Image (cartoon, rainbow, N blue to C red; front, side, top):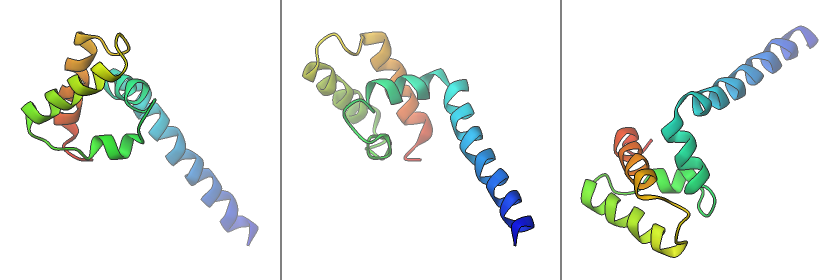
Length: 88
């Protein structure tokens, strides 16, 4: 039984590590998680409308909730990232 648990454990660690590494390698994802994940579960925020205008308006609305927390440049990056991932 032990010989099956060790590979499963190592495989689980690999999945966790690769997920963390993917976030580290994608600066837009990291920014999205830092800014949007501060108030929302990122899975919920990532599943929003894929209409560019609606997304931009939603990000602007969030910017108004905490003035100065998300810059205009950050808002563009976040909006583009949400469009890119398309509900993933």
